Image (cartoon, rainbow, N blue to C red; front, side):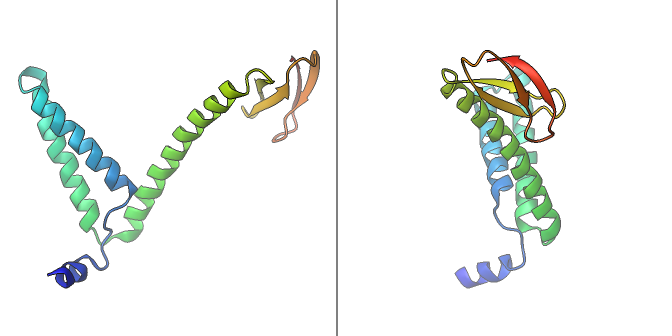
Length: 134
């Protein structure tokens, strides 16, 4: 039986990060549909079914290139979101020693030591210079 399943799944997408997210979302909608059975809560059950169908479609798909691109876009979005939280956490932990500025040209976050007075700040990414008080 296990060999038949392995043969069936050969050449198919299988389970990736986007599918894991869709399954968690599906479980959330199933839970919400169980909690809110009346009124506006009735929308959660069809949403759970739709996300389950999408998950199984992606899992059994043989179009590995397209499913890989979808997963890469999801991972890129996830990385962007995690990066913004990481930057906020780093800013908070370094707030006593450094002051943070945003370059007006390229919007890069720059860090300068506190207590230096009025200084000229040069962006390492684009080379734009501006003044700021540390």
